Image: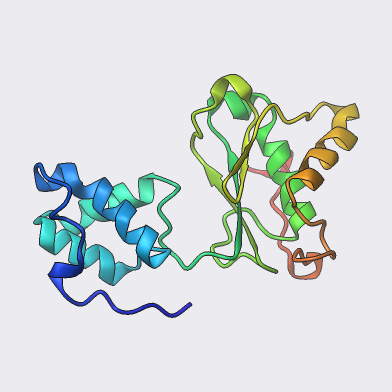
Length: 184
C-alpha cells in the first residue's frame, strides 16, 4: 500500500484538537491512521516532534491501544481478547481454533493469506466473554464447551472467517499457535 509521505508539520492534524500536546496525542494518532491506514515509525517521530513529546511516549501510547496499527495491515484482521474474563472462559482455546481455521499464527505481524490474528489485552466486553473482533465486527459469548464446536464454527462462518485451505486462509504456511498445555 503506497501512501504519500507525511513531510510537513502542517499536515499533522494537531491544530483542531486544542488543549495541551499530551492531551491531543490520541486524537492526532486516530486522525492520522484514518488518513494513512497505519502509523509508521516516521509518522510517530513527526508526531513526537510536533507535540514536543518523547518518541518513547508516542510509541508507548500507539502500541498500547490495539486499534492503532504500527505495521501495514493485512486486508482482514481478527483480534481475540485474552483479558482476564475472556482468558478464564477459554480465550486460549479460541485463539488456537482461530489459528488452525485461518492457517495463521497468533501475533504474526505479516499475517498470511489476507488474514492476521492478534491477541489484545481487553476489548471492554468482559460481561460477554469470550469475545473476538473480526475486521470491525464484535462477536460475543462465543461457545467453547466441548460439544459446542459446531455452534462456534457456525458463528465464525457467519462472521466471514474462511477455513484453512479455503478462500483467504492458507493452512500450508501456518505456524499454529501452541496449545495452552504446550505453552511454558
